[in-house]
Image 1 (cartoon, protein in one colour):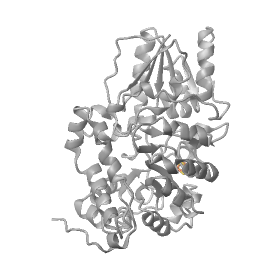
Image 2: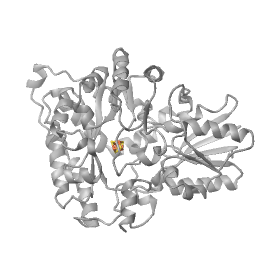
Image 3: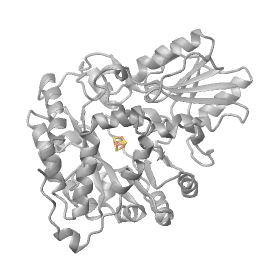
Image 4: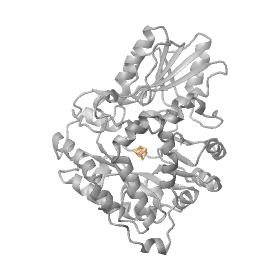
Length: 466
Ligand code: SF4
């Protein structure tokens, strides 16, 4: 049987605002995970429209399309095309789970929730000629899942081919997050067995890993076992954690010893009122500065995430946040305009209050305002969001933020990482065009090398930037 798995790109892929590097980071791991359940005789093809043109000429028996909110319209277009051409079309992913009735109009079968259990159930039914219209994930486990079909991933097209996921979901329940909607009806946070995760790591070439888990430190026992097992593996890795997990116990030291060099942290807002409004309990009353200091003392770079447009925000929130991020030496920052994703508690509340402006999912990209704001106008929110990116990534602020570290090597790494990520767009475009992204890995690995907190390093003056 011929099976084609597609991750469509968002409509913006054709726009001049498109940043190819942003979408050339990670391969479609979810689809490669599902591909592992196909039979030995099945011919499986994996296509990621973010990095390659979709070949629509060959029509397989089954087409599986992964749908997220901003690629939804493109995904439906592809689905309609393949159905008309005679293929059996399955849709799954976050957006399908949030809006099954909408997705159903474009599919023969849809999957609700994570696919590890319902996809093999569907395959069995399809082979016996009894495929159903909808499969709902009713069992959540990562025990004994087959190894990800990494042979289907075109590694040379990605900057970070060694992305990996060893847990599913997150133990928290923020109102604006997709997580609860996706995992509704079952466990919403579960992990692989430590040995299976270590075996998966062992199968990956090179040194660098990027854990795409929502919260790598979310289960302390699992994470501790994982970091213990990774100690001798000579890896450098990046991942995500919450502030409370960074402050609690000594898990973060264990992570650093295992090779953690950069962490994504959801600070989201500096306002307690906003945290309360978003049900982001794990941040309330937590000492952000202490968490940052702890990470920096371990030589771990920080990518801070911030949301603008919560009801407690005013016109000054942008400057306040950028100044704070720079003064605290965050290496990179990801800013978002608050976006009420369908299926979330935030969306339901805003819909009830008549605040949802439209359902053009293309615009639900965390860069545009799609709801009625409070405290500042939509124009102010959009302008402030744009200004924040510009200001945080000005050379002046990159330099100022890198100077916040004690250690020379950390300053240099910070400067190189932040500058490289945001300031060399034409270089990235050229590298992508010449399919040389994979060759950048050694450079990334060296930027993520260990910082030693030696006195000599601390006393060295960072050279002035002209
Ligand atoms: S901590 Fe992050 S992943 Fe977890 S529910 Fe909140 S936003 Fe979602």
